[in-house]
Image 1 (cartoon, rainbow, N blue to C red):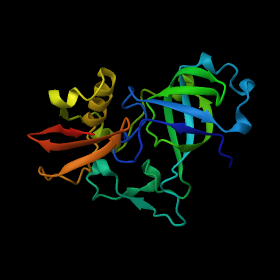
Image 2 (tube, helix red, strand yellow):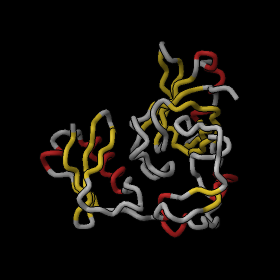
Image 3 (cartoon, rainbow, N blue to C red):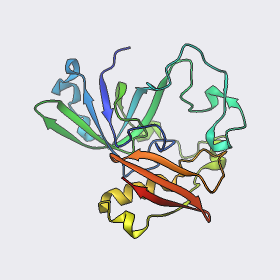
Image 4 (spheres, one colour):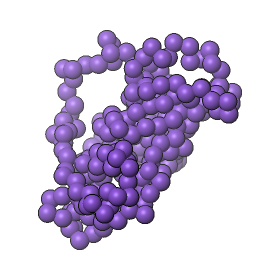
Length: 221
């Protein structure tokens, strides 16, 4: 398959990326097409859609071997499930699927027409194989059952960003950071209160810790 584009997001490393697309709609990404595909006609009509499907490569999980079972983080990392019953990146073919909001088409001289999307759960620089329109009349199934994923859906944790840390962020950055942390990026099997975690987001190094059932931001560089 050919790589047609790359997506550039606010996530510079895997830790902290939302576990599913759309969970944190505040995040913004840019889909920049490879020179061969920077043809305006290829995007004709795309601005009539509100959402898109993105097929992309788990570029940080490419390997020659695979396992028929994986340990989903939201189940504590100790319970094994079939790889095809999960969205684990460790698959026979490292292909990801995300549904994102189309925020607009940015026309540039150097990169051609760029898609601006919201809610992506993808590492910055990730290769994209295809972009397709999301069709609510066939792609949306409100009655669908989510298996074991339904058991952990909706989990959120309270986030505290102290005033001195807030001063280092814009209002928009603070909103995005709080939304990311509410999803609790820590591994589910980690519960030690004293550990300080770090993640790169918005071009900054964010430090936080778990204390009194909350995630508290401790430093921003």
